[in-house]
Image 1 (cartoon, rainbow, N blue to C red):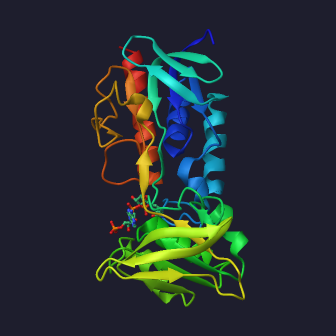
Image 2: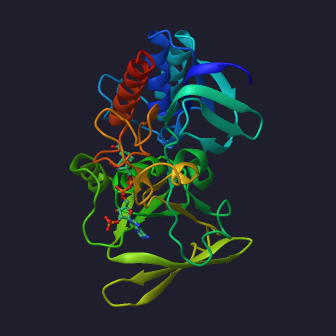
Image 3: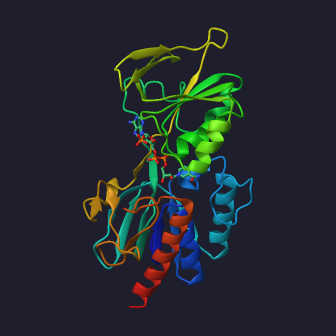
Length: 310
Ligand code: NAP
């Protein structure tokens, strides 16, 4: 691509979409690059109860649809491409994708984070065969069946509640005896008769033939191993894993300062390289939520504009 954009934004989750909106309003020539579909992690969230101003029934996809339309309204150009390398140090930033190469005077990195894995034997083998990282995608398959949820944070508990729409019973398997999730979410889970808990427990192994047929759970206090199998009447069950996220920053780590993979910025989203900004879950920060991601995106775009004005 010949054009030299004012700003190239990599990633069209809430941070990238917000950056595109603000860059568009500043009349910057803006390229928004996304490898899959808009929205990042929140397209997998069935209910958004903590984004100020959103209606009670707001889902991740419905919120993203509004953000995307708003970014488009202010003129961001879009391209679908998977970025394979970047050169961020010069005045002209070069972004190489599988389909094309893009050039821009500034770059906003907003590639977000992806689901962390349990790391136990059988997890990779049975992913898509009973092991899932997305309740909205796979929950409906478990209508009337039992499912297990690994994790104890906001995502695990919220998605467990969502899964009770389909599943007969949802058992949260958590490695401690206290949930990490926000109290308001915990209260809903404790009040839900379909939700049970296996405390101080981790998933040691996943077994089966073709489809998941057995989950081996380890009691972290006693070391005891318990084998969980589907009810013979059901014949199958599912395991949903929500044990955190990893930043998608591999392409940038040789050029940018980071801590455990999370990019280090100042309060104004500046990385250690001039003209390069980071926004959203890829940053080292204290609260990774939609509300903080969109704020980051807005700040990054305003700062990119200031940088361009010299
Ligand atoms: P999280 O808050 O980091 O929680 C991860 C959970 O998984 C923790 O309970 C952790 O246990 C457990 N865990 C981690 N590694 C494990 C392993 N190897 N085996 C077993 N359990 C393991 O992650 P999250 O729930 O995905 O949320 C990520 C961020 O998104 C958070 O900031 C969260 O607030 C936000 N979020 C917000 C909402 C919402 O408010 N609507 C919804 C989803 C996510 P320990 O508790 O023992 O560490």
